[in-house]
Amino acid sequence: MKRLFDFMVSFLLFFLFFPFFLIFALLVRIKLGSPIIFKQQRPGLYGKPFYLYKLRTMTEEKDAKGRLLPDDKRLTPFGKFLRKYSLDEYPQLINVMKGDLSLVGPRPLLMEYLLLYTKEQAKRHNVRPGITGWAQVNGRNAISWEEKFQLDVWYVSNHSFFLDMKILFLTLFKVLKSEGINQPGNATMESFTGSKSTERGGHG
Image (tube, rainbow, N blue to C red; front, side, top):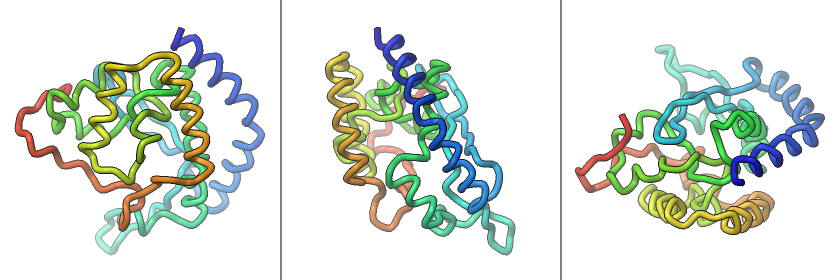
């Protein structure tokens, strides 16, 4: 039921808002250049990698040594606008239709984090990741990594169709209010470097 619901809703939303996507894609091309779509490998269900799609929000500016500048230096006002209203995440509807993502589930993070999780935290990969999730409507990037993973694992143990409906409903209000977009001093959130526990259980 969840997979069927995901596909039907993402299919409907994708084609309903496609004209607006074309407008924002054109603005990305004008303001930030190519590529328009940012593509990055992320861990999916049980840690299986897939390519996540987002509208590009940052420039490719580099320092004198050819290294990319920090995210907060490359994030433009237009990119901030896209992130503020989660417009950059529209292409992830394609990921949902493909079965890489669900509408609701723990957010897919970076591949390098897999070996940093504790056994408890690694349970967040026991369900398909989502565009939004329980952690996103309970603080998003304004809470600590440990708090976020606790919320993710709670969702894995308690997810249901009605909980998903609640999360989708709350997500709409969070986006409109632009809450929890970033941590102070960061473009989004500081990198995860591991929890205090040394017992690892990430997917390799």
